[in-house]
Length: 329
Length: 79
Image 1 (cartoon, rainbow over the protein chains, first blue to last red):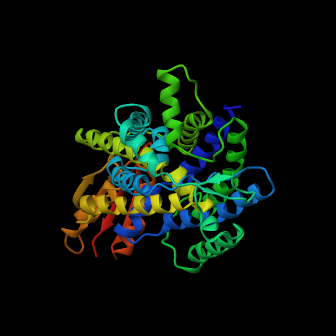
Image 2 (cartoon, each protein chain N blue to C red):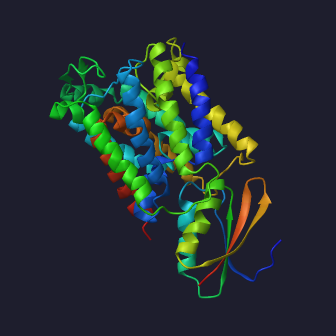
Image 3 (cartoon, chains in turn red, brown):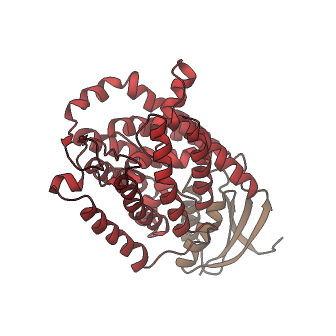
């Protein structure tokens, strides 16, 4: 059933390409350009998914899987990931879909991101990743939407019904999305529709992924690792790995149809070195943090997992630090 | 093709995000009122984001011309 990842990835890739969905830009633009277009997309899609994922869990279609809290990994890994994505010129999903658009720098960023993640999972950098696992915190819960042992969430911390924090946080995000002024941008697939489409796709992705034996929703880092494992070992490719292939092909088809596909090469070859270093930092950081801007931010925040909230905060801080260093003047 | 009296031209094709946006802002800062900046881009998102950012800074977008497949030149008049 892992092939269903290919179909989900194709659709995800088209939405990312048409909606210009990049979280590196979303984080950076509010700080650097006072432009909130993409962060509104992010806020709206998280608010919507808080509802769609919890609903899918409530009716028993999925079991949520909040990632374990690991202050060391979430903070240090998250910050390094945030620094890396600015150097790489895109977040995990950004460099993946831009690879399909013909952005050659994204190819190098994505491959080194995958290498960094693979090396941290089972190679040269695995020592620190394994060492940090001792700080993993999970809690016992009887809430039916979570597994018996779950990473802490806002609901488990206050020991309340998961719907209470879900509705409060979703309401705040919807207010931010629609109650404040939005920077104009004439994208064909506007931020509202891109968010709605992703929020619908997200539980479907989770259901098909769980059916293949992987109980989680959309993700990127594990997918790239799986592609490398599929290539370099005899392990085969999992749902998430197929979804990566789907995203690249989907973005490519979408870009070609919109006449936006082009092999883009930077004039200064040093740019390749910069994106490779950025990619490595992203891979290492994501693996240490337990997820990237999709696993933690896009899919983890809607579960109100504390690990994802902390990791996401440090993705943003890392992003702002590096954007400030490189682009403030 | 537009025939503006271009004061300065920058070619930011192929650069990673957000270098085109940042280079545009940097170039505009050094220019005088009434001068025209030509920005050569090849990424569709830049075509959507740069004009909006430039307008917010008070400059005028004279025109955006397609120069090839996924390639455009943006002409900006400095305020």
